[in-house]
Length: 186
Image 1 (cartoon, helix red, strand yellow):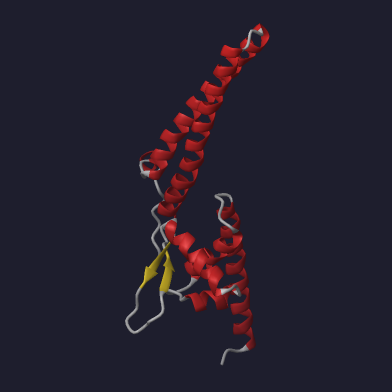
Image 2 (image 1 turned 30 degrees about the horizontal axis):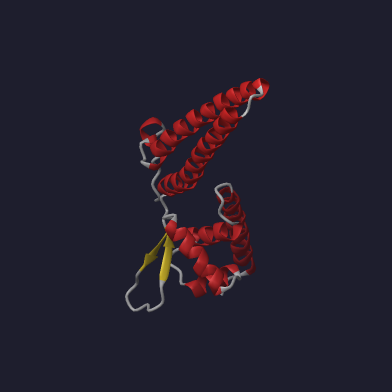
């Protein structure tokens, strides 16, 4: 039976971990991941072993459905993987502790989708503006369209560069330029 000092130490420990889990959730929110899914990842990351959906529900006081949806999202992003233990019939999950891999996967999938969409939208705007330019006799409007098409082409060039950058990150090639800190757990 722990004494009061030990109980206080555990409470302080848990508060520190919870505070950092909130930081993880806030950072993941920058990539479009809900804070609840970020907290779920944090709970899995700091847990000493795999967890069932029931374990997660109890730890986070969320519904089993929310846990299942969150785990599925994290698995799609390669941040959580299924785990197996002999004699355990329920599905077990654990966090992928390689944050570098998780970041490159998440960054690549999220950013490439939006960037590809931006390239398509710019091309569509260019085509529509060119059609207006052909149909109008207003020289001022034609000149404005020419300027804006130049701006859109610049945007397309930027998005093309961004796609190359995303590929460098997603492929892991980024680590040739910005090496990982290789600190191993003891």
